[in-house]
Image (cartoon, rainbow, N blue to C red; front, side, top):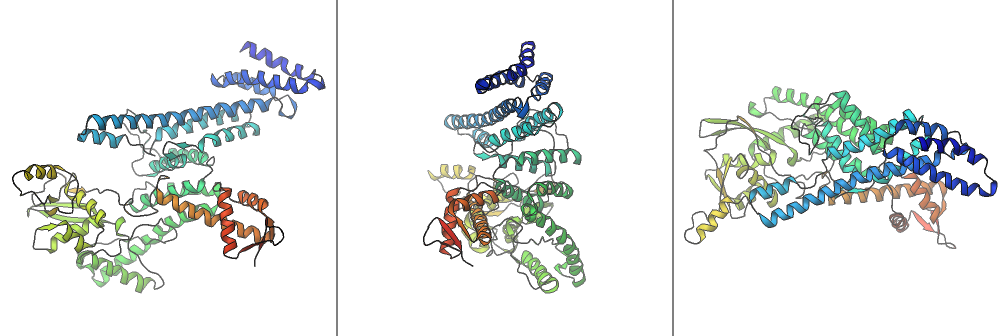
Length: 570
């Protein structure tokens, strides 16, 4: 440090006494001297020496001393960020290699469970917290020791932009940031990290959550494809709200407010609409309960709560329109439709999303054991069917025909009810009664947890459980149908939706520009579109395709004398 300080003290004198012909060479040498010394100080966190260096170099005019120092900061922070990303990618690759070895050496249940646990996930709070800590460290350095100099603020921004837009394994940074926010805003949030050895979880206070959300939004500003983050976050917000897993409506609005402050109301309008739907729905629910009580509907045997969602605000979900609900659920649907469409409004159309509903069923086993089963609406459809049949054993194909549930969805439903932790149904393989050589196959079939079209099912009257309130989970149905509800950048449906939305945004920007300009050259138009679109970085090839599409639809035309000039058609 003493040698570095000596060089810094003499540096301004050398610069001032240089001849004009040698100014460029001397500047390069000075930059190298600053770079070598500065890099050493950044690597070793010599904060006091960096402060001295900043004050000395700030004396040089036109930022000749601070510019190379800022460049070193950009390189150092970018290197730190890239190292963290590379470490995460290597850990994912290492886990995959371990899983492959486990599959080759051992095909047991434990190996399969281990493979599932090590599957790469966007829920990696340790990585996000390390990036947040990196940002906090150098932000504090710039504010406290570099006097919030704009040159260093830009250097820090450039460094984070350089690595925040990298793919992190099979995910993008938008996945990781949104999933970390989802973890904070869900019920049961904690400060414990994924992959940590500690099993102790400490609930976060609202003030701590808000601080973490502010740091997430700061990192979000460095992401180029902000529309990707918006879609992932909106899907996760929908799941929290509809599954009643949101810890606080106030914190949800705080996060949306922070995004709105940085990106404008257009960016958060759908998210705000989702929260408003549920606020209005709470008032409607009270009116509906009074209506049911006054008209003496549902015979007091059922309680119904319905969330009415505005189509444009929420992600698109599969509706399963042709499902046969059974008399219990059908009656509930008819009662609410009459209330909402005849009493509240007649200007809307209701589409029921049964895949998102939940039902609390009072079940009796062996005439004595009473339980409350918390199941999805689709699981309830299957369970209610066993109440309305004299034949206790039902084949898979008969259930498929009777309920009209899609085959793959029905297999997952029956798997959750007959092969999960709580087996309220018995699965009966078709060849269970076979003898001879087929008996071995029968045993393998019984132990298998896969549902076959030849299987049959019956109510498990001997079911017992020490718990009285039981939640029976079911595998996600999102990958069965092409829904935009998938909350990951790896989702094909989400990728397609983003491409469509971006095409619409590009076309809208082109039309706005041409309405004002009336006539514009090809290069000028592309440059102006790139300037206007701030939520993502459009590909110039995609812009060109959108221009051709608008020409085909007669919004634009090419100039007859110069094909590189476009004219707007009013």
